[in-house]
Amino acid sequence: MADNSRPLAFLLLFLAMLIGVPAAVILVWAIRRRNSRRESSLGDSVIWPELSRLSVEAEIGYDRRSSTGRLTLTLRDRSVTSDLWPVYRGTFPAAESADRLEVTWTPDTSPDGASWGRRAGGEIPGAIQIADELFRTPQPWEQILSESLRSPEADLIEWTRYVRRGVEPFPVNSSPEVVLDAADEWRRYLTDVYKSGPPQAVSHWIGVRHVIGRARTTSAGPQIDVSGSAALGAGKRESGWSIGLQGAALLDAEYLTRGKPALVILQAEPSENLNRSTQHMRDDRPEKLALAVDLMEAGTPAVLILPVLPGDCLEAIAGVIHRHVNSRRAEDARVLRHELRTTLDGVGRDVLGDVVLFVNAKRYAP
Image (cartoon, rainbow, N blue to C red; front, side):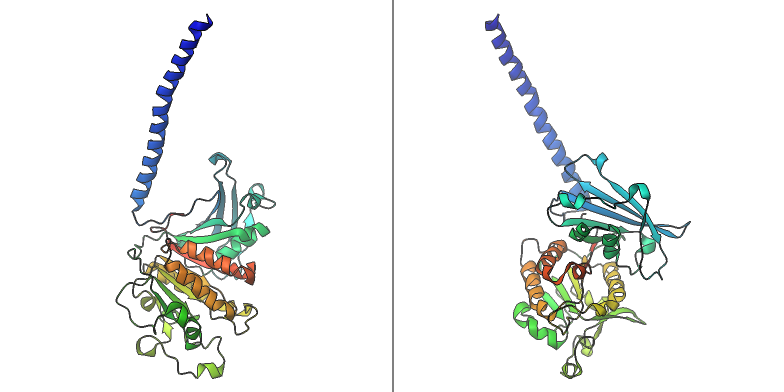
């Protein structure tokens, strides 16, 4: 009886392999086909993020009936099934005049006490999507979200604002050129890093436009002042500095998008105190956010805002940018933001919380 069962067992094993292997091949093919269809539907120019175990998605909406803002925060953990992903919901006053918005979480969905950050083991990508009604509201959503989580682990989140406004981004370009708009005082620090001459009207495409200055509100809309007057002393301002066409010092979105840059960096003027950041110089943040919105609506694929930093960080920042534009992932501004946060980690998490990144959702996938 045993002699007869052995051939039967081998036969059953052979049949299982005959059926199972093709089924597995078909399953893998179907998954790859689905992913390829998804990628092709968004276009070949879409930049996909690196895989991460954890990610956070924040949807900032607006309720017209109650004139209040609504926030939905979703944690995605690829190690568990989707029906177990926690979702937190809250509300906030949506008035544009509110100096500081505070989120009131629904009691049964509050993230208070959540320890999800301990499972990350590193930085966590965070996606922010803002409703059209609140898109131009110059609020520091990154800080509002991180503070509302009431956890030190919220500092691990690298927030990105995904802009879905139907605007076509500039065509993909692989130019490694960095154009610097800044006062002479800061240009002297960066001459050996960027190896670029004075800024001028460019007809060719550029990779990154790095702007160092102070944003202002004018009758023509938000602009950035790169004359150096905000942080330089009187003696330094007498250096005879000039920039751009006809020596213009106030730059608007039209000027900053010449050359169709893949990324525009709006950096606050460094602090003259080389040991610490000057926190009181944050007051131009609303104007910088407004200028970033104009740049995005003009077609810029990505805009990165850097806060006031110690002057001795300037060369390190330029070095990171220079290496990034010559790297394999030069087209992904999220990679540059991560590298800058890593390089500037010593200035403190509160300062890094002021870093803001806008990206066009037609070019960048969450």
